[in-house]
Figure 1 (cartoon, rainbow, N blue to C red):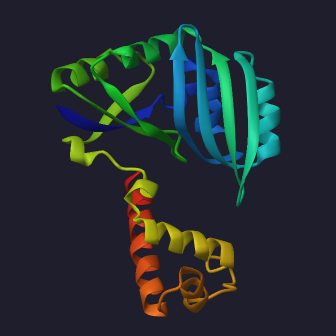
Figure 2: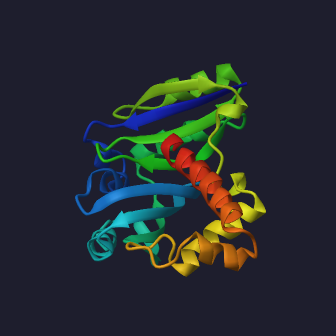
Length: 219
């Protein structure tokens, strides 16, 4: 069994594969985009994205994409928003998604779109099937293997790595203003919310923040 992390690019031809792929990879009003989860059934694809950028420009652009049959945007704060998009597959995108139906291979969310137009994703399965899947991806999409490892190499969701107390500490800090700029609450306020010593609150925050940072950098 093998975990493979790859970078995907179409070298500026993403819109030829699917207009939404081109928009997410190259639109100037999209600063960052992440495909969180998806459902591929026949000729229709539904994807839930988290996007950072100009929501009004994104709304106007998605509304003009012919294959999109339905979409909904929901603010997420700090310049981000969720975008559920359901669209019809083009012939090129259908060929791209066909290898993803290999039963033995699991594609691990998220898919992260980068500023250079590339996207990164992880997959896990038997080594020979993963290799066959990589080789079956059609032009103009190209995949570059960035890392190969075992099951332990799959990035976990940061939230699942936090202990209950670490989660409580971060949630309290967020609610109280510990993470505001400028900061409106200190570790003492978090400690009061957790009913613990400031040094204990500081330890919970430090460990939680370290896990969250590592999760972001490994994505």
